[in-house]
Length: 291
Image 1 (cartoon, rainbow, N blue to C red):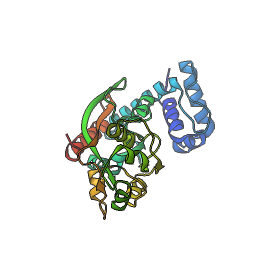
Image 2 (image 1 turned 30 degrees about the horizontal axis):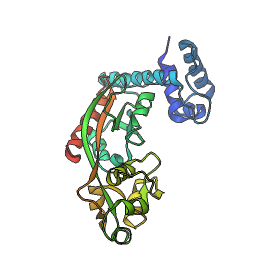
Image 3 (image 1 turned 120 degrees about the vertical axis):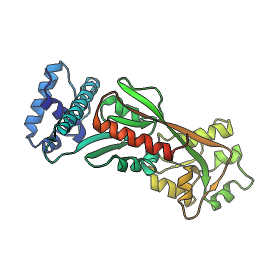
């Protein structure tokens, strides 16, 4: 039989990455944490976490981890409802969000939730945030994946529209006669990281040719935007990213954009904390994203 303390130990070990860090969070000894996780593994009859650094859940561990987080959420709701929340604590809501949402509209949604909550936000590509939801790492995710993760509901939020953009000196140098396939495949581009497919998606649509353009990897949203603004290469920017720059980059191909449709996926679980976050996210997305 799984006990609440064992489930809490599992979640703490995965969140913190080590048994020692989990012990500090739970204010017990590392031995106590280890014993609780082992007892939980004995109860379910399989190994739930890898004993590496950082600790990761196994396939079976992901399922039990989801249960652990759901139990924690329901426990926090129940304590809050009867007026005795855990001493000195606020409801913790783990979420997964793509980098551009996190850099633009999503903090506004979090601020609208109100007091009484803390957020543990995980950043990943919009095509990969559902992996964290599936693993039980988060309770909800902003994603470009429309198919619901098992045990989750999905709702469309809106579109993020990207323009191919470059600094004026860069555009004059590399595209003196305008955009064409040869120039696009020769000009360097700026890419967020190796999961970022926006530039390549535009490139395939625009050139209709196989080929790989030279690229710079800048895995930070601010550095990515600055790299384009300073002429390091061309890249896909949101309208508000372009408008926020002192010297606005040129839209290289105004009639052709790349849209990313975003969805909100969350557990099918009645939780006051999750309901409050979902309402704020939907409301903010209605104002900030294209329909």
